[in-house]
Length: 199
Length: 199
Image (cartoon, rainbow over the protein chains, first blue to last red):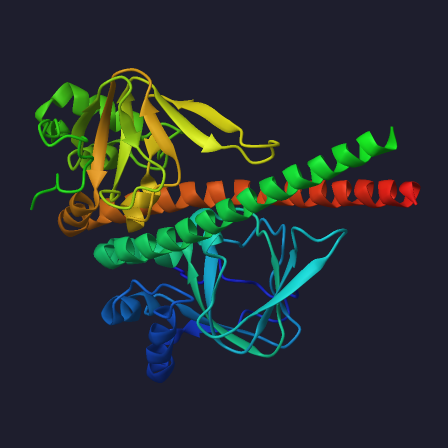
C-alpha cells in the first residue's frame, strides 16, 4: 500500500514530494514519538504507542514560505502533520474583531495540524504557511488504515486521543459562543437604550 | 470487569440502577445496532461493527420526568447513551438570544447523548430530561476499555466515528462563531453611527 498517496503535493509537478518514512531515521523517529506525546498534541498516548504511530508517519519538509495547508483545499486533505522542527504561521479570520481582521498564530514542534482532515478529508478550514524551513511527520488516511489493521489497539488509542482533543476544542468553542451570546445581548440592550434616548 | 460501574445512578439508594446487558435481549440488540448506524449517530460503522459495539452496551431505562444527564455533573459522567425508544428533552442556554433564553430540543431513537463524557469523563455541558419513558443503550468507559482489548479494530472504528462526529460539530461551531463575529461587527458599526448622530 502506498502510504504516501495523500500527503501534500508541491505546486509544481517538477518538484516531487520529498517524503520518506520517519522510521528510516531512528533518532528522528524517537524525537517525533516524544513530540507526539506533548500536551499540545496527544498526551494520552504511552511512549510505546507513540513510537508505534510514528512508524506509520512519513517525513515531509517545507521550504520557508511554502504553503503547508490552504483554507478551502478539497483534495489531498486526508492527512495530519506533527510539526517536528521550524515554525508554521496559521492564518484565521479572528472572530470578535471588527472588519476583516486576520489573526496570525504560530505553531512549533509538538503541534498537530489538520487532524480533522485525517478523519474525513473535508476541506481545510485554515491556511498554514511555513515561516521557516519546516520538518513534519505526516500521517495519511491510508497509513491510518494500515495501523488499524496491523496495530488496532494502538489505532483505537490514537483515535481516542484525537477525539479527546476535538472534544476539548468543542468545549472551548461552546464557551466562546456563550461569551458572544452575552456580548450580543449587551450590545442589543445598548442599541435599544440609544434608540429610546433618540426618540 | 463491572461494565456497569459508571452508568447513571438513580437519585435514591433505595432504587438500584435497572440496567442489564442489551445482548440478553437479541431483538433489542439488533434494533440497537441499526439505530447506532443511523446518520444521527455513527453512520460510518458497518452492520457487524455496530453489533459488536452493542454487545458492550447495557440497557438503561428512565421513567418520564427523570433526569438523564445534568449540566455540571462531574461524577458518573463516563458513559454515552444511545436512545432506543422514547423522547429526551435537551435544555441548553441558546446563544444569540437576548437574555436567559433556554432552548429545548428533543432527541429520539438513534440519537447519541454524552459521547464527550465517554471520552474524558468531564462535566456534562447540558441537561437532558426524559420526556417520556426512555430506553437507552449505555456504553461506559470500562466497557469501552474491554472493547479495545477484545475487539480493538472495532474499537478503532468506533472512536474514528465518534471523532468524525465531533469534527462535524466543531466545524458547525466554527461557522456559528463566524456568524457571531459578523453580527458583533455589524452591531458595533450601528452603535458607532448612533453615537455620531447623537453628538
